[in-house]
Length: 152
Image 1 (tube, rainbow, N blue to C red):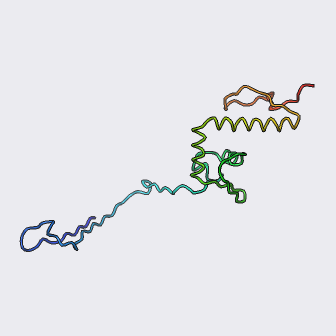
Image 2: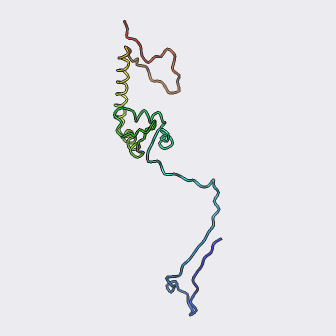
Image 3: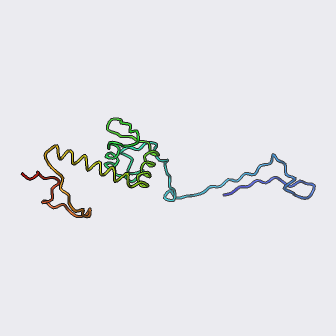
């Protein structure tokens, strides 16, 4: 139902919009019926990311988020609150964009990680075995190993 109230025309004759009194108001009232499945309510994104909400906000799994924030050389401040690791959302997204725009930084980080793994293996008297990269869907064979003892 729609109601409209218009000021009445002056009794002297013609009706002109310029002749309206400035204090006159026009009111419209409407009732709409919208089905609930037709509404989408979106909350604002959180200010801080943690391992509990990072996948919903960015699509990055919690394990990847934790490994990234714990890695040496992670450029952003991380707030530790119990087991939660919190990072500002805008800064983390900017960091991800920087990594995407500079792939050589990512390769350097991967090389540093391989160097650290090699150092741990060497401390245990092992060495890494290079192997051909396979697709993610392939299963590891039991004969494949990540380290081996050096020859005697």
